[in-house]
Length: 156
Length: 224
Image (cartoon, rainbow over all chains, first blue to last red; front, side, top):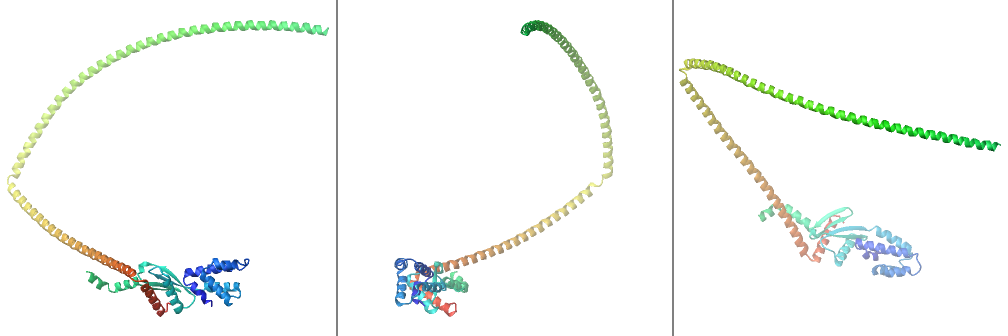
């Protein structure tokens, strides 16, 4: 349902932006003619405006008020996958991870990135109350703990 | 007619009042003169009394001074006489005390001489035995002291050895503790350095691969 909108809300930040844009458009529905179109052109991202226009052209949006109501509810039900990673994610990173999540976890999941350089590499993951630490620092700590004596012997 | 009576009545009354006022004025003047005389008389009397009082005081003062001078002279004479008596009495008393002392001393000297003679007679053969006994006692005390000193030395050595041993143990324990802390710190530093180096060395692609690998693992573990 409205899967064309999903790439516009890959991360938690993007989801919030999309919600605000749709609220903005919804608020223009009962204003004088032309205000809605102007908002579509100037107050929302080009990608968002493109998808809305496409929906309108394809006849997907028959009742705009109903559409905004439904899409608002759908976005509110999105789940969040929190990933703590060791670097600032670039566009490709967001895209790759989101694609993987979409294929393997399902639609309606946004990624919330947190950056913590101290973990070295890998990630710490929190999803629906579950926590896993797949960071390099954790693995290194575990390895050092298990081979502590050997390591100390080597150092001495 | 009435007017004439009133007129003449008024004139008569006015005249009478003038006469009365004149009498009052004359009486008042006489009264003042009398008062002035009395005042002057009183002042004169006061002056006379004051002069009399001054004279009496002066006489009294001179008389008191004479009494005091006489008293001082008499007191001085009495003191002088008392001092003479005191020195005479002291002289007599001193002589008496000296005699008493001499008598007492003679008595004591005699008693002492007698006691001495008596003691010499009683203890004549004892000194050698006493000397031997004293030497024996001294030897015993010396031996006892030496023993005490020896055992104190041994005790001290033992205590020192025990303290030293305990100290060594404590130092060793502290050393091990510090070494362990250093080892932990080294491992901590190693971990931090390794993590930092890996974080910097890996490319974006490697980082992303590591994350995707972690996600795969999470999926396998049913976390996702």
